[in-house]
Amino acid sequence: MLLEMFRLVDLTGVLANAILGGIAAKKVGYDPVGFVVLAIVSGLGGGLIRDTLLQKGTPVALAEPVYLAVALAGAAIAFLVPLHVRPARWTLIGLDAVAVGSWAAIGTQKGLANGLSWGSAVLLGVTTVVGGGILRDVLMQRRPVVFEAGSPLYATCALVASLVAMALTTAGHPGWGTAASVAVGASMAVAARWFGWALPTEVKPRRRHRKREARMSGE
Image 1 (tube, rainbow, N blue to C red):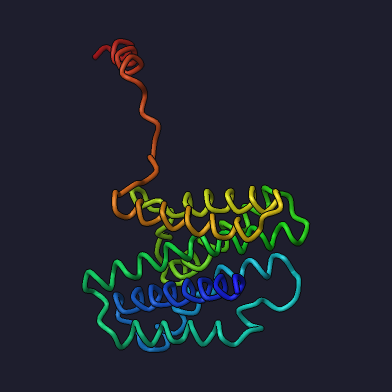
Image 2 (cartoon, rainbow, N blue to C red):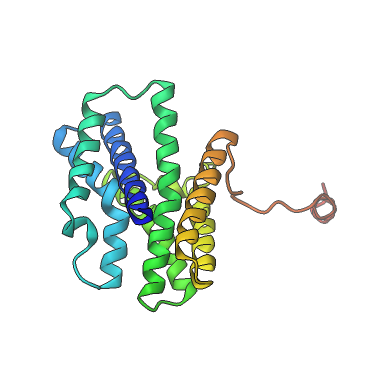
């Protein structure tokens, strides 16, 4: 029952990110082929990268047809349904936030199960979360949103969620690790959007240091 619930959360994340890929296609005026490609890349890209790096058989997104079907459904929704209204936008943000924690846990736990060190497993968790979005933006020939200065925390949320999953999984509680990762990752991602949390782009010197620099420069 628990595994089925987490699988549902995983597929919900695929749907949300596929829709986001379709929305990106709509903004630049792509045709339906562009919608499908960006939806698949956005919804399945991170998992494909993860499973390819692990080299442990066919990636789940290709072995189980339901994943491709959900991604295509996301493309269709983005193409046919107006999603610019505020309720729909925040619903997508919420679903995407849940995917952050879910994918972070899946990537991290798969890494640990295949004998990776905790650091490599956490890196795999973060890659699972951000990989699809980066591939989508590269295909669109634009700077990945996750690297943009001032953009709300995303990779950081994935990192924290992956660390939570790693800690509880190595302690012998993988189920709790997944649940806690989803809760922490989703909460952080939604809060980052709501409050505009972002990483600084530079370290500003303290006031005393600025005064000293001003004296040395003759200001």
